[in-house]
Image 1 (tube, rainbow, N blue to C red):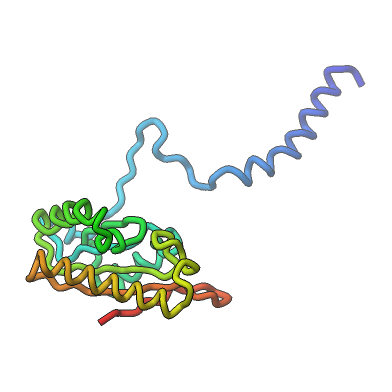
Image 2 (cartoon, rainbow, N blue to C red; image 1 turned 90 degrees about the horizontal axis):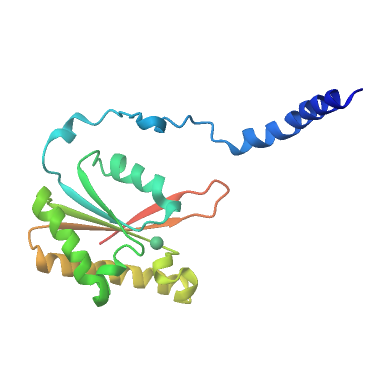
Length: 187
Ligand SMILES: [Zn+2]
């Protein structure tokens, strides 16, 4: 076998070895945004209006992202009828005097711009904004702190916007074989 043929054979062998690895790393989705292509996704017809009913406040935690959308859109029935502020620690930022003014300034935009009538606040257990579950010492202490912060947040909001309805929820990730996110309404 001459030198050129050896290179060809080596190339063929390498292509079989390398290809599966590359295919594994590549996303199966085409990059539709290359060359400034645009993607159009159908919006809810109701989204053409200028206001919405509700402002939803959640933590950014990715573990709850899909469940939050399902809960907000389907369980609460708010499809395309809500503003959404997602911030690490959720309502802890409103209870904390150091970040309270910043958050209020963002809330006021939603309230005045979109004429919202209700605020839904969702806090979650094992939140990094609080230092995780371990920082509370016990499950009961964590639950009590989250309930207290949620109720304090509701008081602060109603003090500023007396006509608003404020609904509070705590969500938690279960450790079952198939993990689930459970939501509990806090009175
Ligand atoms: Zn969190």
